Length: 193
Image: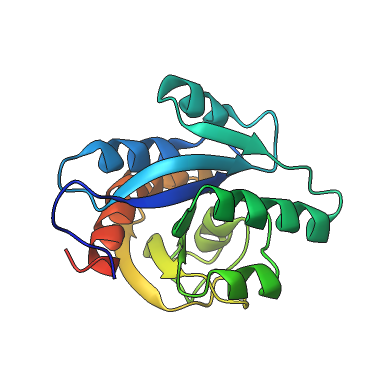
């Protein structure tokens, strides 16, 4: 697996569609001396994604791909990733489902963070659904990406207590704070640190 000795870090790409708050926390994590990763590429399916600004701020190469034709978009992404010698992919609020073929190309090298305690509440609108079901807890999960949505092997989870005053929005904020802590921890675990 990755070497944890010396300054050689594993080149990674982060895929985003929105604000990029998890991207930002991963960039901060990558800058730490003991971090096993460096972030060398930001990929988005949305040219208006606010998170793209972190590419500029931290001088990280960024690319936006048009997803009108998924097969075409994924081919271009795969060649970009191979050109840049990227070894790991972190999905951070990327709102596209990756094809089986794409996942096969990077088997065991794609991680995702999901805002629920998987296997519960796969897919979208997790916070609304959790609250509608009067759950006592929610949380977040970092898992390997498999060809089934939100079903890959779980690496780490963090529970978040839901208060009776929580709304989907307030719960999303609480969970996001934990996501920013959990993703780097999960990466360390994957790299046996």
